Length: 370
Image 1 (spheres, rainbow, N blue to C red):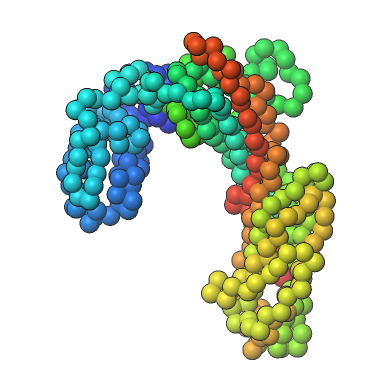
Image 2: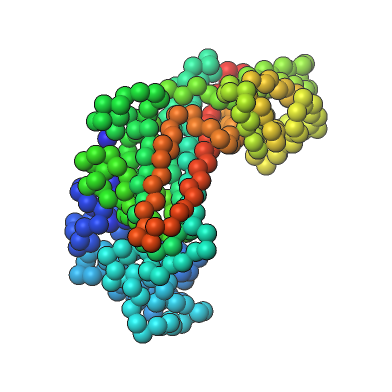
């Protein structure tokens, strides 16, 4: 399994809090600079760089030191390099503690009346189904996002149902997952993770992405689509689309969009749906079937009728795949679980962790043979 820490630009995953003057990936540095410039100028264009040359010069001076990445966090840079119009203002003569502090991603002295941390486990499903109904490729791309509202400098420890962790500890019981291509925020102690699979960190304040991962596994399409095109004489066509929810009955897919390609010269659309509503998008040659709430195990139907100047031309016309968008809360297709979140702070306050699971569509395509 490949593991890397995205905040320190390392070629090797050795430590998350090591000296920043280490070998770095050139492409990662360029990407970080671009992200910082976008935070300041909204659009990274030649004109915006020319108009804000002074700010660019100051940012480069802080981003790089003797050719090595230095401070790359835009939130930290904005504490003492500010911009109004095309001018640079120095807000404080005192260097913020986040620059000199060992924990550069978090300021000292943070206080909250109510200490809470919100954990979002979000998984996107990528699926490609061929015209015969076979899954050609599939994988799961996941991320764990945090919103921390914690006082002081808390130490957090996150436990997942990681298969390698269970194998190390001899507790190979229940549902476990094997994560690949794991990437962590710079706050995570990589040496600790690589030794005993413990995710230990001092979190940034507010919103952040703690980690991302990929699970390479066969995924059963959660929303299955069947489509039939009926051609009548040479002047009209009818498209029938059946959608079936292939997930647990107690779960519900929200904000479902099924995008069905139609002939480029179709006109005079008429629709009939069992649930939701359909609309024709002529500039994209699509019918978009929108379903606000789609329960698991249900079958829904949509019929679309179009007039055509000629049907014969479409025999050689390639049909793009049907694409589906959806979001299923309180559910992960991989079965990943947050087993615990321990919050340790020297003042000993009690904090509440909240966990939310979301599965959503990624690159979700179903090809048709008609």
